[in-house]
Length: 471
Ligand SMILES: [Mn+2]
Image 1 (tube, rainbow, N blue to C red):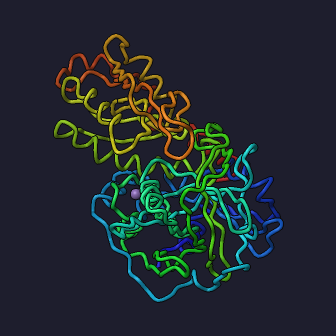
Image 2: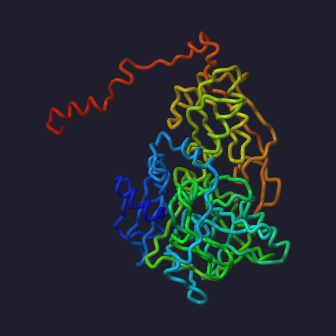
Image 3: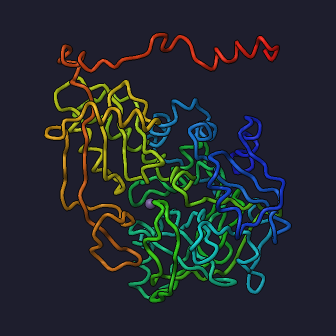
């Protein structure tokens, strides 16, 4: 059974898990500590919450993503794209599971008893940022899962902030009928469930069934106690309740993934909690939102990379695609595409495809040739500086729809759930001339230092150190 514990065990065996034995405070210390590592982190002693452990940064790096997918790091994007194209694997409904070991209802419910972390300095308090929020379409009964931020307001009440996507469509349907929307918040499972929840699959596709395809096994599901929804039986914690119609309360501020407090305080729907079910020794799984090097961004960018891999590979029939990267330092608004251009202006088609997908995030796309390392910003900007003719190699799209949390855009609807922004988009062709013009392409053959690829300083230093007897 693939769940959170199984993943942490694998990470530990691979030597990738950092354990913190010092007692650490979730309200004042963990935010910055999570932000300082990209490796899976487990706090074994939590100040003020003696029965709890807190973990996070589970799939931030290619190495830990590879661990979750059980492939080599170089294959992560292509393999994820392959599994996402396989179709969904329906969950298997079972009678009960570990998440039902403790069932708390009525006055036993107290969200303040959970070690919810304060992410950033000016946040309006502790926020659950790792909640996989399950809702269903009242017409079709098909469930949707989205990672929405939840501000702890009270013993049994949180603020919610819907993105203008699928769960927001559900809420609008319930609200039009004057009915409360049932919602269940799932915290802590195998991180591929978190990845699936953040994948931009079309409306009507259940993200937990996508998770089944990513895991290669059906997710075991159990019925909730107080609402008519199914949740994973091997989760750590499930919070059940309703989002009532017609209610808006102040929510925020919360430092978002792009590292701005853009939404400040605003009026949002609320989540009224009716029950909490969890494992007897439940682990709290955290997804840190800032700075821009942490897991919140990786969970958005990884499925985006896989989606763009599928999309761009088929542009104009076939692209000789090598790699796609949505780098953490680009706030999810920048896409780097590495391929070998064979035909004239192929890069322009690639750039247009990257800027128009099922993701609204990409605002700037850069096409790069097969000799560029996408994980090295110096390499990327060397290519931009030496291969781009701005009078020929730029595509500008004025007045496009951009991400609602991109501060460079103009707000066109009131801030709050469902707001939108418009702004320009930019494509940069930093590739060499295509292979159909071999002579021109040759001009751009890059200089490599003598010995490149044959020897490394590390080896030389190691050999010197060896003289001292350390090797
Ligand atoms: Mn969805």
